Length: 376
Image (cartoon, rainbow, N blue to C red; front, side):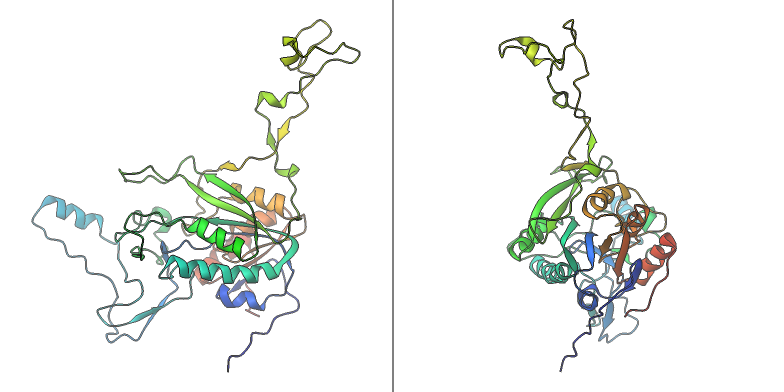
């Protein structure tokens, strides 16, 4: 008999809860958060070090693939140096000892379809927790199909993170090697089919993107942010995130009072504004700001000691300002090092977070100077 999880009627905010998001969210009350800002683990890209190997016939087995290199040529010697420290763990089963990897983290699914299904089920719980006027800002990156390694080794930011190991990419049926999987849009369309309103696609443009050594395609310099809502009418403060006008169209053609209107064929009609003497005047400037555009130029920033998948604060600040009223609650089910909570706190919003990895919770606690409560 499966024991049903008891749902709490009330909950404290400005807290981080440790646990598997797939089961933990079921314990939260309904209609408690105003805004969700989150970036789930990307499919089959990183290992966050939360898995356990069970059923091993050899307790000493490290479940790492052999990297045999000959020392006959200079190229092979150099390759051995490059790969030093880049352990390639088996994804799901170790052929050496027969151990199977059990992992609660999202992103380790064998196929894109499994990943999408997991996300759809998870977002049903998020929809339940979200108020009717709430918004969801979902950041997702994409993945390429192939049998090689991930894009590069550990960076300086990752050196202290034992979970940030390079993993092999899965081979997906009907998708030949080098295919871009299209994970962001697969998830977005699946959520739309499940009842969410897919309100907008925002492009996060990275001016100083991660360099890539590829020679048969362009270097990737953007990611997707999807705005999702439960209902057609929702809270959205467009004025608070407006940006300065830079377009001449922001200047309204007008004329001083008591001045004769220009004929449609008069070229002066095309000018911004004219004073009594017919000279150009900028008194007609009435649009000093404009609505925020859908391409956001935000450089990647690193939080000292955090793992590599850190949100730039400037990226999510517009999401929180526009999508959550003052005093409202910002929820991140993949809390990580706590960027969403930090930005929410800075802008007089409450935060609520769930995180599987206790190491990341420790980082977030240091950042927020909060306390970690017991899990319900």
